[in-house]
Amino acid sequence: MKGCVIKALAQEKIYTIDDIYALPEGERAELIDGQIYYMAPPGRKHQDIAGELFGTIRQYIKSNNVSCKCYIAPFAVFLNEKDKNYVEPDICVICDPDKLDDRGCVGAPDWIIEIVSPNSRPMDYYKKLFKYQTAGVREYWIVDYERNLVTVYDFKSDSTANYTFSDNIPVGIYSGFFINFSMLDI
Image 1 (cartoon, rainbow, N blue to C red):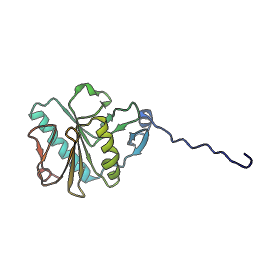
Image 2: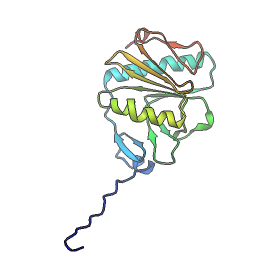
Image 3: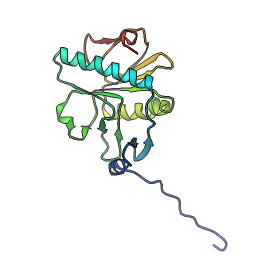
Image 4: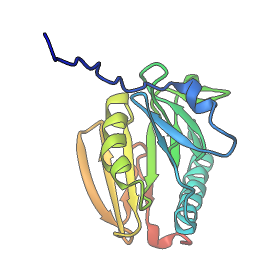
């Protein structure tokens, strides 16, 4: 093979949870299928929505003696594929106490809410949607405040619905619980 140059194909580095924990202090990232995705700090509107939703959900859980826990980011969720998937949903609800340990949630939360930021749109609408569905999340909400839209994926019944911020949005994992964003202080 005179004159032929053989080049090895570059192998893409596969990262693990250890790489996430080795990040410099204050740097946040998520790990999906062994790839690191760095996270920008959330804006004020994002934080307003996250805080109000967390408070509303937490109050519902407490006042109805529901045996679930609600967490707000940053909170570690180790999805189902060994050490190659780590996310920090904006809000998550876990109803199985066996999934909780000192590091966070090991396995799929029952309900995840992601609040779309300008840079997170493809991640929230595509990558995370697929990962959450295949991991066993029961319900996934994407809150898109720029579009005044909440997309609700009920993976248990394989349905999707879109709501505006003025709609009463039913929470699929809790019968009789609705959230209306126009009633929140955002």
